[in-house]
Length: 81
Image (cartoon, rainbow, N blue to C red; front, side):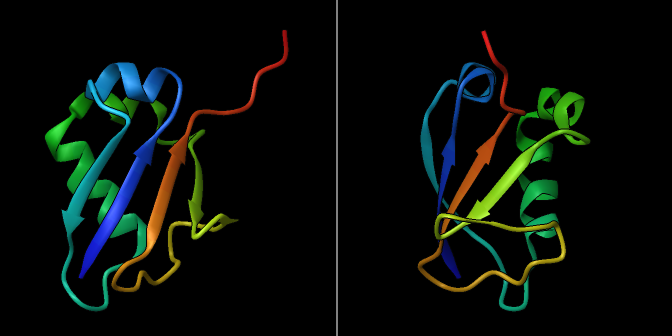
């Protein structure tokens, strides 16, 4: 399955990009996708307990199944200022 993955804020700084296209196997979950991304950018593991995750502009949990053509957004926690 092919997914569009978006990175925001400090996560964009860590990855050096705001968007990638990624292939995952059929039946993959958001958690599987995160594991694949964290293996590419290990520094993202520092954020794993506080990430906000969205699939097609709806917040989801790590056990959410993914689908071909989905848009995944990975965001740090919202901060005021």
